[in-house]
Amino acid sequence: MNSERTRVGVGIVGWGSIARIHAEALYDLPDARLAAVHRRGGTRPEGLPAEVAVVSDLDALLASNHVDIVVVCTPTGLHAAQAEAALAAGKHVVVEKPLARWPDDARSVIASAQAHGRLLSTVSQRRFEPAVQATAAAVGGGGLGRPILGEALVRWRREPAYYAQAGWRGTVAEDGGVLLNQGIHVVDLLRWLMGPVDVVHGSVATRVHAIEAEDTAAASLTFESGALGIISATTATRPGTPGELNLFFEHGSIGLTETGVTRWEVPAMPRPDAPHAAVTSSGASDPTGIGSLGHRRQWEDVLDAVVARRAPAVSGQDGLAALEVVQAVYDSAQQGRSVRPGG
Image (cartoon, rainbow, N blue to C red):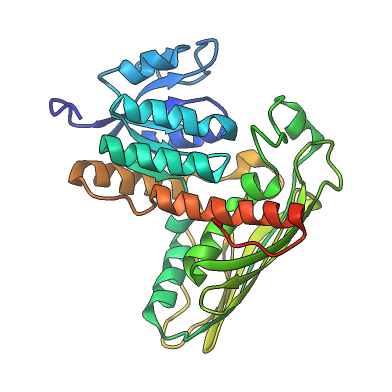
């Protein structure tokens, strides 16, 4: 990083709805400066500040001395190659979920970050929401006892126009289906809070949408602890309801949605305060309805990690672990048998 600058320069690769959320989060951070955006065609997005460079050539963004961190916000199938190019150019890298389309590609990105000595983080912004942070503290405190059952439920709605707006949407190679796109956040939270997954048995189906990948998935899990789990995800239900995470332990239980706490039975720990208004938003029926608070808090961690030269709170390995669970569901559905993640 150029020591003459007081702020960390960030370059965004891709300019869709999720890139706009990153930009909104970065505008709020005094230690960050959005320096450049890579956009196919190079046209300037409406409302983007004049001081932000817009380039059509990715190599130009990667060669910029004003960019210290690259955030990859392109279709999933491009994540790995673009992340590795940025790492090879000496940039720290943040990758929107998922880290890569395939676990082997994710492992390659992780190896590249290690080889080049650069920070690598994957976006898991829900980990930074106040209610989730309180849940992690409760689970880590030990008072809940042994984990018994975890449920990750995504009953969202995406209209046909969502998939029709770009040719890559809903494809297996470039996008993936509901698990890899919409469901991976609750899969990440379930695994983070309940522990590593040992065995997965899953099924997938395309019930409503005219897409190649699945719009509906269900899976049963066995965690290494012996606890059991359920993943249920769809983009085919109306009207779409906020995703749920329900955790049951020996001595209590916790229920969360994207908009706050629904159940808090935790010994000797008060229920968390109502969330800030920026958290009470959901992408259940509108992909643009996702708030920016979680992204902003994850960016605060990433920026501090770069300056302090420490590992970020969410690592590439975390991104790989969630991806391996999703891939295990796909493999199980294809093979008709139980599968071990990463096996």
